[in-house]
Image (cartoon, rainbow, N blue to C red):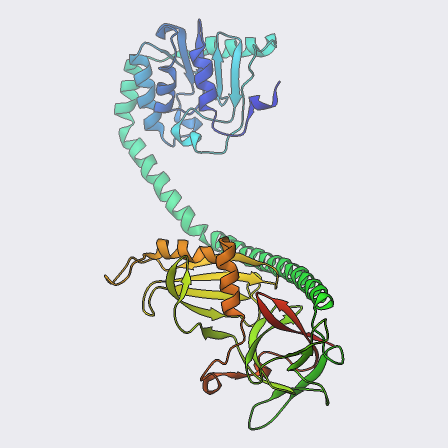
Amino acid sequence: MAADEFLARDAYNAWVRLVERAESAVWVLTPYLDDQVVRLLKRSSVPADQVTVVTDLSPGSGPANYRKKLLALRKLVVAGIQVRTLARLHAKVLAVDGSRFAIGSQNFTGYARRSREATVAPREAVLDEKFRDKIREWVEAAEAVTEDDLDRLIEQLSDQMDLVDSSVADLVAHFEAADQVRQDRLAAEREVERQRARARARATEKRRREVERAQREQQIADLLARRVRSSPYRHHRGAAYGRLVDVWDQGGYFKVDSGESLTAWFGADGRSIDLTRLEFIPMILSPTGKLALVRVAHGQMSYATQNFSLGSRVSIGGEPLHLQIRFPDPVTTEGVNVIAVAREHAWSTSITIHMMFDLETLDLHHIEQEDRVRTSPVERFDSDELRDLALQIVDDEAERDAFLERVFRPTALTGFKCRGRTIGSFLADGRYKIDLLEAAGGLFLTARRG
C-alpha cells in the first residue's frame, strides 16, 4: 500500500471519493453517527435500497448524542436506505461494492471530523477473502430497523435522553473544573519552556550579532590598515601617539607625546600639510568604525561631537532640505555608524536614514519614515516624496559624494563648546596611534589602540 493511503487526519474526503465511485452497493458500519453520514451517503449514485447502514441501536454502546443518532437513522430510513442494528458493533468501516474499504478509528459524526483520527483507505480492492466475508457476515446478521421503531424510541426515550444530555454536560463541566489543576500545571510548564526558548533564541541572536560585529570590525580594521599604509600623509615620526589626560577644568583631553603634533603632517612629495588649529576634523576609530568630529590643537584633542546640524539647508536631488547628523555611540549592533535626519522645514515631516560608512562605501541599512501627510500648505513633500529624495543620498553617486563631503569636512562648529562633550566621551582610556588619510573628498584622522 502507498504511504498516502494511511491517513492521520479527517478521512471524510477519502470516504467521499469511495462513495462517489460506488457502482453497486455501499455499506457503513459504525456505532456512532449523526447527520454527517446522511450528507456522505447523498454523494452516492447507487440506488438507496443498495445502501446499508449498520449500527448498534442500543445506547449501551455509548449514550452521548444518542438523540442525534436516532434522528439521523430516521432520515436514512425515510430516504429508503436500509438501517440495521448489530449488538456490540464497534468497528468503523465504509465498504463499497463489497471489495473496497476505508477502515479506522473515525466515527461518522461531525465531532469526529475535528478529532485526532487514523484511517486506512486502500486505493485498490481488498483481496483478503476472510476479511471481506466477515464484514458481509456482520451486515447480513444485523437486524432491520424500521421508521416506526425509530419513532417509538425517539418518543419513549425523550426524557431519558434529556437526562443523559444534561448529565453529560454536567459531567463535562465538573471534569473541566477538576482538571483545572492539571491544566494550570501544564500551562505553567509551557510558559517556563517558552521563556527558556526565548532565552535560548536571545542567546543565539546575541551570539550571531557578536560574530557579525567581530567580522565587521575585522573588516574595518583591515580596510583602515590598508588605507593608512597607502595614505600619502605621514607624521614626521610616522604617526602621532598619545593618551587621555584628566584635567579638572576641562574634564579630560587627548595629549600627544612630547614633540609630536596633530596639526603638522607631510605629503608624499615632502610638502607640509597643516591642519587648521582648533577646527573640528572627522575621525574614525579602528576597529569599531565609530565616527565623530574632533577638535584638534597642536598637541592635543579636546572635544568631540557626534550630533550636529548642517547649518543652512543643503540641496538633495535639487531640493533644499534640513539635515541633522548623528554618529551612534557605540556603533549599533546592526552596523550603523551614520544617521541622517532629513526634513523640508525644521518643524515638518522627517525621514531618518541609517547607514554604514567605512571610508570607502556608504551602505543603507534601513529608513524610518514618519507616517503622516502634509500638515501645512507651506510643505511641498509628503513623507513618501521626502523618502524618495532622501534615498538619493545612497542611490545616486553624485548625491552620495556631495553628502559625504558636507558631513566630513573640517569645520569650526561655531558655538559648539557650550553644548559639546570632551574627547573622553569618544575615546576610551588607553594609548592610541593617530594617522591621517584621504576619504570622502577630504582629510580623515583615524585612531587605533597601540
